[in-house]
Length: 173
Image 1 (cartoon, one colour):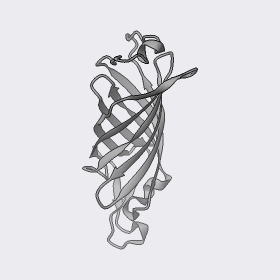
Image 2 (cartoon, rainbow, N blue to C red):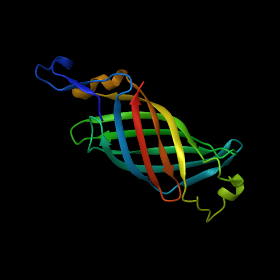
Image 3 (cartoon, helix red, strand yellow):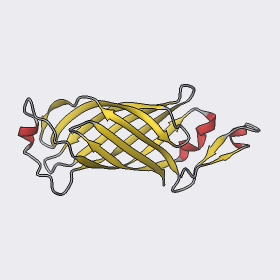
Image 4 (cartoon, one colour):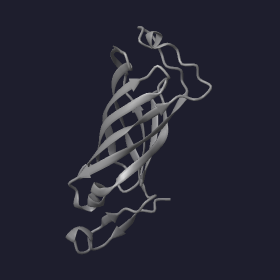
């Protein structure tokens, strides 16, 4: 399933296990949960929310690592959410910074209420999966993961803002 290979002489470490990343390789898959959505306010372009999220990397070279971050989320009047999410992957000995940009797209059948309704106290998102699409750049100082510093990933997954469940897969472009 994971096609990422390891180069035994990469990063100047004879006998090391530095990764090599090729287009299409799975860089990570994570499963996690959203924290509470904190509305910042209703603006002309939509409702700004801030929320934290946390989960575990379940596949890829950092499998088992904690992943967490802050999602600066703008829900537009058309129901599409714009994502700006700086993330950290922490294996316990290595850290990776992931700079995510993307969109959360509602299902076609979902009627999106007016933003004033979404902004009202007590509003709850329905328990349906929204599609997550985006891209990210990655930075790390970990020698084993140095190939990620020149990798852009495409992100696909789902988020359920009603239940908080989040599942995302990142593949190298």
